[in-house]
Length: 342
Image (cartoon, rainbow, N blue to C red; front, side, top):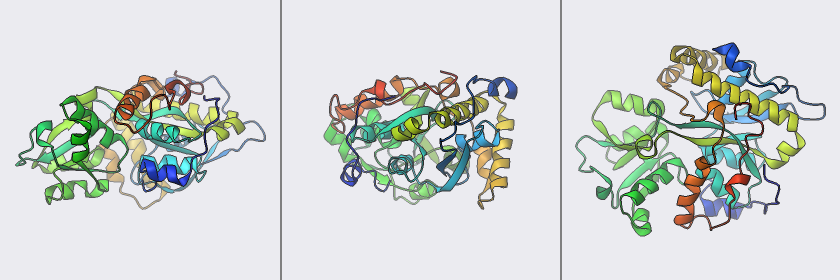
C-alpha cells in the first residue's frame, strides 16, 4: 500500500486523461482473518453494478462471505474508467477498471490502491476484435485509418489495440491514425453490421450472440496477443483503507473468496447462481445474459495481483507518452495484503 503523498486529482486531470465521460466449503475457508469490522469503522460499502451481470462483491454478499460488511448499490456504471473515477471522487467506495486505466489515474495523483483482480482474458473469456466476413481487413497492415469500436477510450480495448499495432510495426503517429470510436456494448454488433465501424470490439454475451448469428470473423483477440492475464482490479481510496482496515480486510477477503469460488466450481453451478442473483435482486434485467458466462478470466487464484499485470501496461503508456517515465511505481499502487490467496 502506498505511503508517499500524492497530489490531489482535479477535474483538469480527468479531462486530460479522457476519463470524465468515461468445492464450496474448501473455497470459502480460505481466510483465517476475522470478517467482522471493528467498532467505529463503516460497515456499509457503496458500489456500482453492471446491468445483467453479477459483480464479485455481489457474489460475495450472496455467498455470505462479507461478514458484517453490507453492500449499498447506488446504480449501474457505464465503464471501468467511470467506476474508478466515482471511487476517487468519493461517490462510491469500491470500483473496478482495467489496470491501464488505474495507472492513468494514479499518474495524475489519484490516492487509490488496487486490492484484488476481478476480470481478465483466457481461452474461454476474452476481448475479440471483429470484422465482417466480407471485409478486406485481414491483418494489422490493413488498419491504417480504420474506425475501431470500443466501449470507452483510454482503457483495455484501446491499449490492447495499441500493443497489437505496435507489434506489427506501426509508429506512434500511425497508431493515432487508427480511430477509436466509443460505442455502447449493446450497439457494437449493429454498428459493425451497418458499416459504421471497420472493426468492433466485443466481449462476453455480446460477442457470443454476434458469432452465433454469423457473418463476422475475428481479426484477433487479446488472449491470442498476450496469453492469459488478469486485466483489471478493484480499487479503494487510500483514506478508506486507513480509516477502515477491518472493513477493508473483510471486503477484500470476501471478494477474493468469491473469485476463487467461480474459479473452482462447475460451470453450470456458477451460471445458475448468477441467474438466481439477477432474478432475485429485482432490477428488471435479462437473466439470459448469465448463460453466456464462460469463466472469470482471472489468472491468479482468488484474484491475487501480479506486478506484471501493471508493469506490462505501464511500459506501453510510457512508450506512447501518456505517462511520464518514473511517474508511477508499480510496487506502490497495488497490494495483496488483504487477499488470503496471495
